[in-house]
Structure formats: structure tokens, C-alpha cells
Length: 470
Image (cartoon, rainbow, N blue to C red):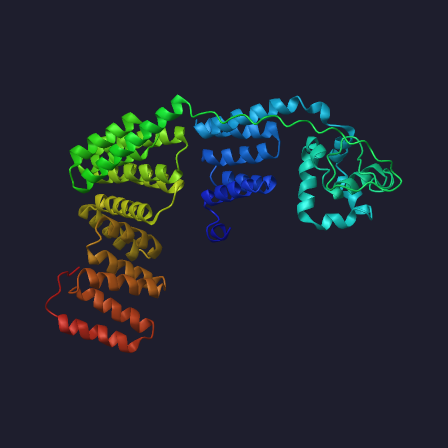
């Protein structure tokens, strides 16, 4: 919750909180977070899985099925398929219990339910308990749940208010612990009153003998044996990897996966070996297989994120920055780590620098600067700023465009921007005298007289060393 307050645009945080609330059976709150997750990132299939799970828990079968199917339209994942299957089975089982939804339960579907309870002095105070209100809302949405709720004495008071009678006292004889038909078992045992005749004790059924625990079947034993054997190969590969014997490590990790294809760390370790050998295509292939198999095996999202991050690193080594950025971003969607976040930022910065570098053309820079000069002379200072900016993009190492743009900013009374440009011009070429003169003019206009004199002094110090005359 604190993380969401700091980063409300992170859909993964809403997904995680939805899962936590579902674990506490707070289905309506889990549903709200799942819907917010989908709102932030409607292309992330896991958000629909969270929504389907919350609706499943609330026994809103049709909506849950629709949520899972909507997620499957985005990504055909094993988790969504499993969730859809489970909710369909639960919905089919619920159909057989429809006859148990009595008239008592149907009372809770009354749209004026809370109005009736608020106007009844026996139940008005119950609405102050938000958890109880949430329970009533859940039953109102799915009246079939009513029959399982009468272990709570407050529910009896609610039903009495809906029926217009006091079920807690008027309908039962003193000492009786019986409830109206359709109610669950009483919340506690009451001792029979003195006026009630003792009932004959029922004969306790003889306890059935407990079944003996079945021995572990052969298939389970074989899987366990294979996993142990595969882990031994993994340990062998790890030792070879540390010793930089990558060929031996490759063979060991490959064999581990062949023996027991149930742990994707064998594949990610194999990919690391390929990476160290410089075989980046094989590294990418092994990681992609780890991601696909991991989805099917419902592996930890951290392992899947690690495989995606390694794909990004391999593409980065191949100098394919677009794919590197793509897979770093995918990795962060699964699990955020500082290492991958830094790699993403480095790749994005390198790509941006290359785009700028590819745009450089001194001839086009000179042409744009001349266009700016013409606009400046015509009094179109805003237009000249645009032309000088284009000239700077085409050749950021030519101080003249910065100096000329400073003059245009000065005409527009944008003195801080003008001063910034002449400072850059001086940084690009410390011997460019015109930049010092313009700096002095700008500082004088800003009433920084001492600094203006210092700029003129720089001109005197540099006289005879200027590189540009026009």
C-alpha cells in the first residue's frame, strides 16, 4: 500500500495487493485492486487473472469466466487456462445447489436491503461495522451464500428485520437452540431449560478405521530420483562455471534439463554459460525456452524476470538496442531489480545519443543557421530561435548557432536562456570572442555589472586568438 502511494502508475503493485487481499478472502477489495491494475495496464494478462480469482472467490461465476477469457485473448498463459477451468468447474457444481437457495436467501437480493436495516432499531447499529456491511454486500450480490452465514447471530437479527419479526426470541421456546429452516448450525451450544424434556441420547456412530497411508507411488519416486540426479549435474556445472570451464558447464546444465525438465534454473544457467562463451543467439534461445517452460510450470516470477533480463543483456552485447530495451522492460514488468533498471536506462541513453549522432550534418547545420540569420534580420526572432535550434541539433560542436540563438533570446527578453546559450558557446570554444561580448551585453541588461566587466576582461585576455569572424 505504501509503494502504491509512492508509485500509483505501477500496475504490478496493484496486482500484488489484490493477491494479498484475496489470500485474506477480502474478495471485493481484491476485485477493486485487480480492476485498477487492468486500468493502469490493460495489456498485462496477469491483471485479468487477479480479477478472475477475486470474482471466483466471490462466487460471481459468469463474471469470473469473462475475466479469464478476456485475459486469454491477450496472452494464452497456463495460469489463465487453469483459472478458467477451475471457475467453470465451480460454476457447474453451483448449478446443482440452486435448489438450496431458499426464499430466505432471496430476501437478501432486495435492492432496498440496507434501507430496511437502517430504519429498524434492532439492526441499525449493525451497519456501523464495515466488515459486516461488506459481508451483507457479498450476500446481496450472491444470495446463494446466505445459507452459510447464519452462524453469526447478527444475521438472524437481519433476517428478522427483513421478515418483520424478532427471530431471536419470539420464534423459539426458552432453552431451545433450534433455528428456522435454512439456517446453519448455532454459534454455540445452549443447555436445555428445566421445562424441556430431556431428549434420548443418540447412539454415536462407530468411528471408521482410518485408512492406512498409501506408500509413495513409483512415479513419484522416479521423479524424486531424477530431480536429485539433475541437481547433482547442476552442482557439477556450477563448479565448472566458476572455474571458467564453460564447455563442461554447458554439458552439465544441458544434461540436468534433459534428466528433469522441471526446474528452469538449469536453462538460465545454461544461458549464462552461452553468454560467457559469446554465443549470444544460443543464450537468447535458452532464455526464451526458460520463459516458456517457466510459464507452463508456474515458476517464480523472479526466475522469469531473470531470464528476460539476460535476453536483454545478450541483445545489448549484440548492439541491438531496440530489443535490449524491449526485454529489459519486460523483465521489470515481472520483477523490478536495480541492476536491470540501470541496464535499461543505459541502453535508452545510448540509443538517444546514437540518434543525435546520426542526425549531425555540418552542411545542413550551416544552412539552418543562415535561415535563422535571415529571419533575425527580418525581425522574426521566434522563427530564428527554431532555425538556430535545428542548426545546433545538426552540429552541436559549432558555437556560432548557440551565440546567434542567444541574440534571438535577448531580443525576446528571455535573458536567462540567452545567458545559458552563450555559456555553452564559450564551453564549446573558449576562444570564441563574440560569445564573451554577447555575454557581457546580456549581463549588463540583467544589471550584473561586475560580471559584465569580467566578461569584457576575458575579451582583452583573448584578443588575437579568436577562431570565427562571422
